[in-house]
Length: 236
Image 1 (tube, rainbow, N blue to C red):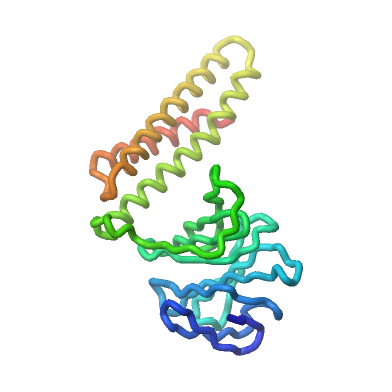
Image 2: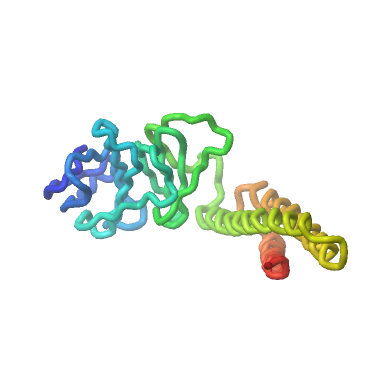
């Protein structure tokens, strides 16, 4: 469906919702997909493809006022990541997925920043995405949201630990033998142990599709506090 700099009305196929597109994007761009929000009647996301104009940059636009204004939201996406599709998670507000010519990207903050979900997946053109609940999962959405939120916190802690550990290892390798080297060795061992414990808590959270147990929540909180103290102690 064309999405130009005029005053066109665009209708999404899923909800038949109309958005008035007043100068949302520069001329001669085409919206291959417009995704209406599951949570807000005035919010939508548009995947823009300018491949035929030799523009290989990623383009995703978001409106929160029914199409009157649009914001370009592709921070974190590399050059050459032509976007074919953008979809919103039906359970978690602000969780978006985008399909590009190379990989799938995810945003946890309503498109403000993106990160790749490619992992070891080969470069593949993603033309569309479907985000839906597994029909075999009977867990209420609220419980799944609690599981996801807690799991994301643990993933953030794992990332912080993974960032701090190489720094401590490098400092220990440079330190001469003595008390300082022993202190750095103890910090390295502490961070490595915390990393393992965080991975265990994450596995427990992901083991079943259910809200995290009070014990798992408490363990995650204690580990977050321990990690913060360990990183503070390892700061240069």
